[in-house]
Image (cartoon, rainbow, N blue to C red):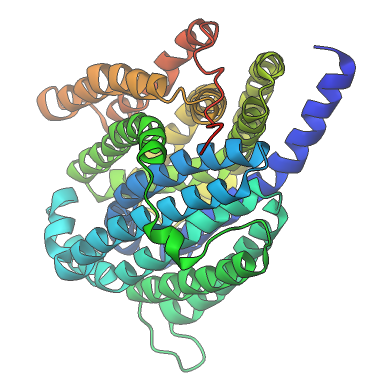
Length: 451
């Protein structure tokens, strides 16, 4: 790659990745603020809410797959400057997300105890988590639609606005959490339920803001009739991208719920330590997600414009970027680990677990950099989402999960050993990335000439 082209790549990546990373960080802070506030309340609250939020996590596997598939196609049509058909894919994503969120809303509000029993048998955790779900379920409806618009906002070149929205949401959420969880200034002390109420408020607010943005954006074609628009060709294009993304997301996501179930089986100490580690990883992962999102938009637009050779040269550079970002992830864990260790009110046993989990996260987050940038950015930008599904199936379901279940339920090995085994899936996937990359299956223009 020539120096000029390299400069264009890095300049474009900065413009995209920085706001995307900031938005990912701010979104993570919404969940982290709940964990931080509850972490200063009591251990049972943080454990119960972490388990209850697994339902929302499962929902995002579906809505996130819908958003990702639509985003790939919207980005390619956007690169082609076909805004009308880009808007039709946005409408398709909104319609599908509404249907999915309604199903999970009913589960959260109507059957919260049954949901909690999937993850724990401890009665206190079930009671706290069920009360939380009855309230927070309403936020599912707002979040699913808002995320579709935020996806289009990034592709439309307005990623900075998504950062502003997320910043406002974080501030409001943290203020609301403080008053509602602890009961300050005459507000009733609601504990975990206070966190649920604040989540509903901020998700509703986020939806209102993005709807106003879409209304003012001239290139967003979203008349009401688009929500009912049907094209056999478009549906085929969408499902071709969506199906492998969903398969991959479900395969990976269900494994995360299995992680939670295993930690729940190992007790409150293990659950609390794993929850805090997860929050730490999510915050550090924001830079990686920003780069992955930026790479996906860049590669998608280049492929949509028919510049296939340029896409290959850009892809080569992302290996170097993934390595440097992996080292950055390790450094961040080393820096934030000690403050996190001392901040949370955990038992001595839980703190020992937390220390071991954070140490192992150095290896995990280095591998995560490579896997995320390519399997969630470069590859699917050209319609190659199958590789992620296949790699998750073999690394997670044929190796990490069975080994962890045996270690936990049969061999009854120590908590930290079980945790490390469960997280080895990211590590074993890395050696196969370059081999698949060189097949160039991902180098495809997915747009239609006559749509």
